[in-house]
Length: 240
Length: 240
Image (cartoon, rainbow over all chains, first blue to last red; front, side, top):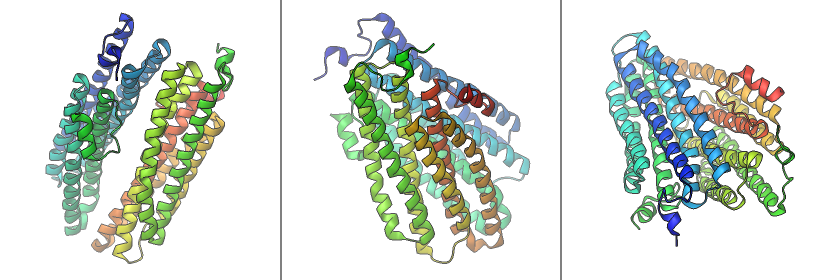
């Protein structure tokens, strides 16, 4: 049975400790917001062929990297200083893991921005952008919902994000098949279609990272590690 | 200035604590060995068209996942029980991060095994396998060296691993260009070449994960986060 202290966030003997945890959460959500923007803009830069925006995204990735380093430091410092246990410790360890997911989403956005520049330089109306826009919107929503689930410690929403991941994988498979068809129709499409294929792959990865964040939210809330559990078992953990 | 306690691993007031840290290291290295085997065998299954071996790899991935969960639990328990600081805490936090890298390498091995099955079913002598073998050997060595650097807490070896990552990226780019050429030569090559392309991409990712592990070793040893530092700055940290 969890003790009362284990039950409620914020019910700490030390107000300073509580403030530090709140600040860690706020900083994590700030990093999440930055990464969401980077990803959304990278998809926009690709679709609009906007090289200037793509350059900005690549430059801004340094700020995301910087936040990763700072958040890791802060989380480790809190552990050393406050010697947390139970729920608090789960929160801090989860933040350390999720920060690495956010940084990787930032990297995928940077990669998409780089491909946007290549594709815009090659000119010619591209194929596969419908698919990019569709999957891009889907994974952006997943990322947003995962961060929101973290902000509100909402395991049910986190579970919904985890369920979406399978759909994104299916959409990605279908889009990859479509692009293969374009490539086979005309060998002159191959190089451009490959670049679009890498964008799709990056987006599919973002879905995985959003899913990782969602799994961590469930771990924080429920104390159960459902990363490799079946969907059925995950539902039992969240519902029970 | 680091205190003496901060200076030397194993110089703890509590022998039990020391034993726990040693056991955590040993378990991490065991997981590393499993993942190395999975990756090596996945490349072998691909090149030999060995569907039976590929099936085994896919089944064994569950054991890797299980180790991830156990190591995370153990690391978190040690933090709660021992309230470590300084070097000890850096070791534990780094293990938590590196475990996630190992699990992802395991996932890449599983993906390669799946592609090995597809490619072996399609028959016909494949193109791009020279490149797969070459890059595969390279990233396997990087992974092995990164784990070895962790076992011996050898920052200089870790830095060498980090330097290799750039070469792997270059090899990957060259191999991707070669495969593009095959695809353009004959559209009947496209589908198979795409599968080989995904294998190369997985291998390139393994290089990234080996690099992450190496960066963590330097962090444990030197207390400096060099993930986003220039190679010049990383050299100063390791050499100084």
